[in-house]
Length: 196
Image (cartoon, rainbow, N blue to C red):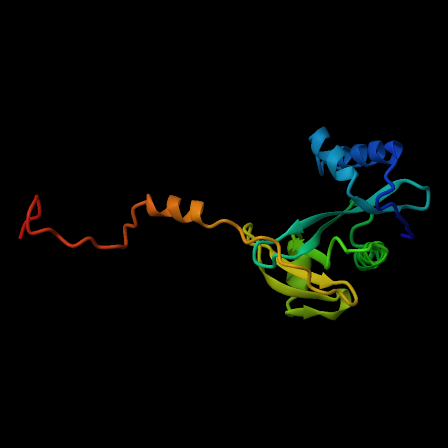
């Protein structure tokens, strides 16, 4: 299947937003209209088939992982069933990455160092077993809280920015302190209810 990859980063018009919302709804990808409307504004590129119908989309939003403390584009890609298995995943991703890289290069201060991928598709995760995958220039950095591979792909010449503030751990530590640890043995007191 031949597809046309159309960049739309920061240029999503209302008509395209409505088309994306319908695309996700029709493909049972995003059923909530508010979530779909928000995601539509994050579109980087869309794929159109030979008839001009929307058949794929890539979206990105800036996120800061607590461990990295650097801004990255959290990138998602969704294809309609007819486009899956047509070997368009990598060309589409590479085009979207180029669009985001070019956009960042045009800024006085980049808003992101690159792309963060959470690999949700189990077939794709199984196919990419190396710590570094040169085909899509992505490096494994660990697993997400959902147990999915996390990979990053930095933009050419990306330089570290001042680190984002570290997450406040005091709240989490205080919450943990109130939960009894069953593996920790408390010594019996010589007074009180302890039996010898």
